Structures are given as structure tokens and as C-alpha cells.
Length: 228
Length: 183
Image (cartoon, rainbow over all chains, first blue to last red; front, side, top):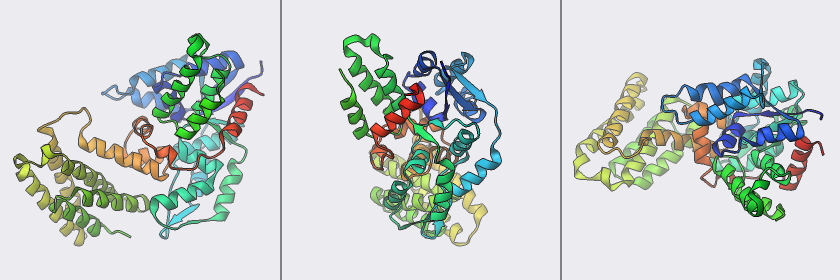
């Protein structure tokens, strides 16, 4: 079986573990040879730091991810891309302007994922965060959104947008809901027997409530696509 | 553009008139300004205006028992305006800290939740940033609120229904199948 690689950001791991659907990762590894990669920064963010909180509020999620790393379902990659990340972040943060000022949208965390995906030649990204995905897929809708939110005319630096887009054009972003839907089609929830479709639909809603950036309309679309 | 003295004035006037709606509007304005011109002071004013709006909406915090605290907050807000006008950053920051303690005192006398109003204010501020279009990591860094908490809050709102969805679902699924199954 040929290995396929998917680079995951912290947001997808958070929604998967928060909805107790992290079993999707070993499912894809065992059944389809998909290897899930995270940079060290994501490991720190999703495991090390939450485990240091006295409140233990996110400890269980963190331990689930730690366990997946231990079982080599998730592999941590060491790659330093700080300079490139800073450059791409600066570019991404100079696309939109409101009231004569720059709207700084993206941060090192998400930008690093885009840079690493290119550098490691892993064009597949699993990301439940909304802003970066929309910036990659449909920056014009981001402009419209910002206009509505800031109640101001948003100016777009087309050159910076083209430069940014050219650097991310080969990347494909999916969310944990797509992961779940495909797993459902391939038997992940078959043990639910005659309530399999209901379980899949409920699990999709669970991912949304855990923070995966998916709209209710899209959830309805998923439901329509499901075959009972 | 909203400068610091004007922002402080908005909060002072809304609290002085005990007008929750006005405080919410002040909070909206300050938030929008803060996103474009981030500063520690505007961030704090943004969180505190949210918390004060919450306080104004709760009858249990607006009774006579708390009238002393309300006067104290009124006075601190007036001092904030004055220090902002004089561009006295040190005193402004000190007064913000005293204001924070005063607000926390009000709630601590009748605490009901694990997360206090100030923490909720920070979370709400972070989630609003994310809703406005700022990335999750940026919202988390700007407010000091964990990503997991922002996602948990965001998931229970309609923020993902208020924006374009990017690629359509059939295209996205096709892409995902290629990615995961090699189809």
C-alpha cells in the first residue's frame, strides 16, 4: 500500500479529540496507509502546553493526541521554517486594508502549516480553522466578509494576493468533517448497524460543535449525500 | 479612527447611565478599532466593556448592595478618561488594573461559575476576533485564550454560517477522496 501523507494543524486535532473521533486517524492509517504529520509547534500546542494547565481542562484531549503520537499514528516532523513562515505571514497580512490600515489576519501557527506543506511536499492539509482555509481557497469571499464585519470599504492589494496565492496554489485543504464522511462511506461507523447514517450525521454535528468550521447548510448537504 | 480617550469616554458614559445597550455598542466600536490598531490598553478596554455590559444586564449585580462598587467603578472610569486625555500611560495602566480588581470584586461576592466574567470576556473577545476574520492562532495570541476554548465557543455560534464556505462540498469531497484514498 502506497503511503499518503496529510499534514494536520492543531485545530483539526482539537475538534477530533473533543468529539471523541480521533479514531478516524488510525482508521485511515490501517485501512488506506494515510500517515498524519504534525510539526513540533503543533505538538507543543496540542499536547505539551495543555498538559501543563493546573485546571486539567484540556488534558484528556492532549493525552489522546499524545497516545496517537506514541502509537505512531501521528508523526512529529522536525522542520524549521521560521524565516519562510515570517515572509509568507507578512505577505498574507498585507492583502487587505481597512480605513487606511492593514488587516492582519494570519499568524505564525497557521502560516507555518502552509510553508511546511510546500517544503515537505505534502500538499494535503487537514485544517478545521476557517480564516487560513478561506484565504487559500476563496480570498474574495474573505474581502466581502471583512467589509461586512468592519463596516468599511476593504481595499485589496492584488499584487500581494497574487503572490500569496501563487505560494499556496498547490495545497488542498480538507476538514475533519470530510475525513469523517469518507470514513463513514468506508465502514468506519458500520458497527452502528441500522443507525449508521444517523450516527454519521450526529458525528458531523459533533465536529461542528467542537469548532470545525463547517456551516449548517453544509451539514445538511452531507446528510443528503449519505445513503441509508 | 477611535483614539484611547474617546474609547474610555464611551465606556465611562455607558456605565454612568447604566445603559447596557450603550455599553455593548462601545464594546463593538472598541473591538473593531483594536483589531486594526492592536494595543494592550484597547484590548483591556474591550474586555472590560464587555464585562461591564454583562454586569449591567444582571439584576443581581445592579442592586443596592453593590451601589458602593458602582460608584467606585464610575470614579475609576472617569480617571481613565482623564489619564487618557493627558496621555499618562503609566497611570492609565494602573487604573485599568484597579478597575479590573473592582469588577472582579463584584462577581467574587456571588460567584456561580468556574469561569469568571473576566475570563468569559476574554473568551468572547477572542471568539469575536475569529468571527470577524482574524485567524484562530492570531485570535488566541492576541487575547491569551486557548485555541480549544475559542473553537468550543465558536462551534456553538453561527459564525461559520455568516461567511462564504470556500470550495463547494462535492469538489471538496472529491479532493479529500483523492487525498485519503488515492481515488
